[in-house]
Image (cartoon, rainbow, N blue to C red; front, side, top):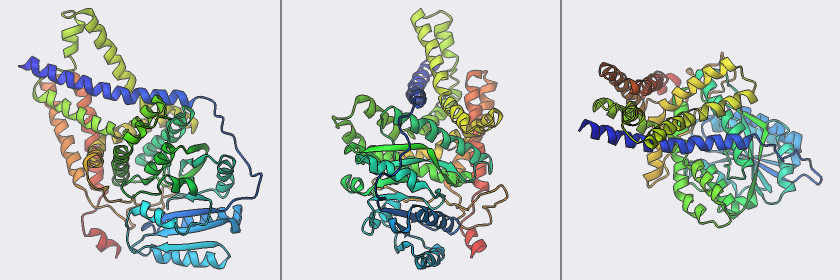
Length: 512
């Protein structure tokens, strides 16, 4: 019976590792592609500047929205007042509306083409606000910035010429920079992950001629392409991913400017980071559910493009694999199944055919190969931003624990995206205008109430600790590294989540 259970767990583990390998191998492929020379050069205007509409979707952003508005006005001044329309798309339910109203009125008196469009509801959330804004849009091109971004004054001069030069471009995406990358361990880890995505993964997709996504901010859309693709859709929490994929399925091309970075605030707390990641996970999986069949039916796309698009849309499935790995580790301890040592006993020592032994050796090498894929991608990104190796090691270790620690909340989000009949509620990531190590977030509004996932994470961490002790008492040494990883990850994320959350009702007492 014990051998049967061990064999079943081993087979399940092998299938899990093969899934990990597919995503890991793809990271290596995109990393290799990212090293190719770029053929995208800077462009300048050789004709009259076209009109651009700058849209700023905002919901309860009293701390950062005024900063964004000032940056956009400078950008309009640099490009030409008469060529830029600024639309503040405000769905706020707090004093953000009043704060922005005064700013908008002041800039309007200074001669800027600026309007505040306030909705008394959040129908469609950000996607709904952007869809509504199309009725007011005057420009041929639409630049979009989220509230926490700080675009450079020459942003339009460096992006619009690309759109003018190539009428087939549906959208253009720029790299996200950071306003607070060194604030704490969470922002340092998140900054490394964002750099890896934009400097390596996104670059690799572009150079491999694969689909990329508009990231919802710091980019430019062609109004004609937006309408041609069916407009903004509110049936997903990743309206940007959804629209940009529909554009590419319709045949529109894209441009990606990795050398133009637009700074933005990184969530300074684990609860804000988890909320952001959960929304992206649920939205991307729902988008995959909506678009994957039409994507694979498109005859103009190559098999490579279809597979890459599938892996791209389903990447958050990796967090489900992480959580499944944790469950298998617990099962191996509970059933006293020495899964990690079993292949050595069965195959490598010699009781099975040499081919089986060779397969197991190759399998373990493949597992190690894919495990370090993210580490290598992040290392290349760290070199691009001139990060010290010691700092890279600290940040990648923190990112590893955070990545595994949020696997419970992201697994829940993945299942919601996969099976829920509704798109869900767009829960915004709170921003606190954190610009220096001395800035505080705790004494500001928009604190996040404690979530049930924090209790689940803490319980999972405690269970991992108990299982680790039980495994050691039964000499199940092979499973201990995995259990140690999950124990530290879940306990850290769970405890931080409780510490950085507020209990219902406390925020009202503190900030009203």
